[in-house]
Image 1 (cartoon, rainbow, N blue to C red):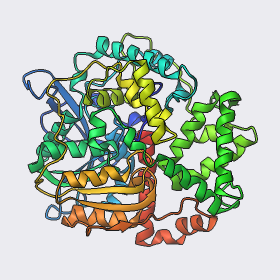
Image 2 (image 1 turned 180 degrees about the vertical axis):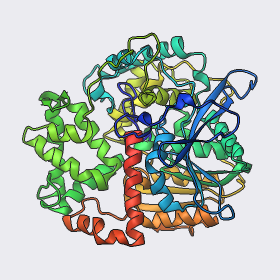
Image 3 (image 1 turned 120 degrees about the vertical axis):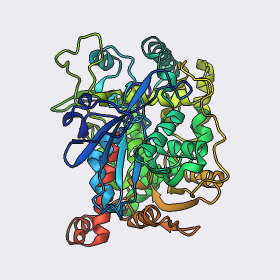
Image 4 (image 1 turned 120 degrees about the horizontal axis):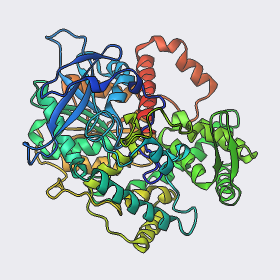
Length: 562
């Protein structure tokens, strides 16, 4: 997810100005919001608009929100045009605008040119307004969320006081949010974003939604289908969160395969051999033991890191997060993790720090001491994620001892419970809950078209059990299984999956029940694998799809920080 994800308590989660293309190339403030899609040229080959929607759908005469939308336009003839596909990269808090600006061409390579590929920033996120913020300036945000901590979950296993510390931070955040943004926070919810998606669809002149949602985007897609079953066109949800878990603020069940993903690293490293895995040892068990030794050492013997652009103390929390990050995208990150761990074992933390944690230090920009936030809006990912996740869920009033027990129980499910339990802790201070918000049922007996549900066999944060449960909740929908380790099919590129995606969107054709795809790349690619993939094979259609998939995965990681 919930990608991802990170630092629900310490940092600006998934969103980062690094790698994002949209923040420096277009002035969104120059676009006047409209009740219609008033497209203007933006970036290079894209069109942008801001759509007015009600802030409160129960009181449409009140204040409005403005949804930032961009599209990678279809190049097909009018007769071949198949309408818009709305895209959500996950988070919550990921910018759909950035995602499509960076990956629109690659997505078109997979789905074809008969669609407008539409990225939108959900209400509260990035360029959409009101933009969630409860800091008065960039400097205040940076003091609360230091740059290098903006991509980590604080480990609740760091010390015996960690849960209490994070609980206290959550109370401060909740109080600041109410005092500084309380007038609109209760409306920054998934059900309202689902309503916004219907407004966008209707503004295109379409009756039914076409959508591809990833990770948290599966919550958004499932919520839409439950609320508007007669408005479902072609809806794909990929990397599926358990809806009951999401809306109850208890994501413990989402960890059931996390340790399996870690085991895939140790087993894969051993199988790859010393030439292809720098952290190789003579057995998988020995690799596991060596990794545990590094974790134990990181608690008592953290290492100083100084690079040309930043510096930090590399300890247990940062190491645990680097390992966790790699589980999202094994085919691209396992070898990087292995190299970092090998260097760490030699007393050098720079490699793993640079590969997973490093961010440029904060510097005050001109005018940043004014009374209003000086956002690149891309820096509000933390606030947006907390607002959406906690406003969706039941009210959490857990005290410190209850949260400590919650964490202990989560540790029984996964060794990464010390990171994942932060989702519960951060909501313990949240007070913005709208009465009457969507609370189920989390399915529908008859959608106007069946959903395509995609799940990986070993997904570290959205196990395939969530996909199976969702198929059962929406009868007629079909599960497409990807036999791969990693979070969503995006992070395990598969030309097989891409073929079924294209058939579904173009023809409405679903895979046969029981269909299983495989990924294009091994967990530890050899030099021969890389040269084949990047060389002559890029001329054939399958290799073009695989290359496009890698580009989409890279774009999504930059937008969501996973």
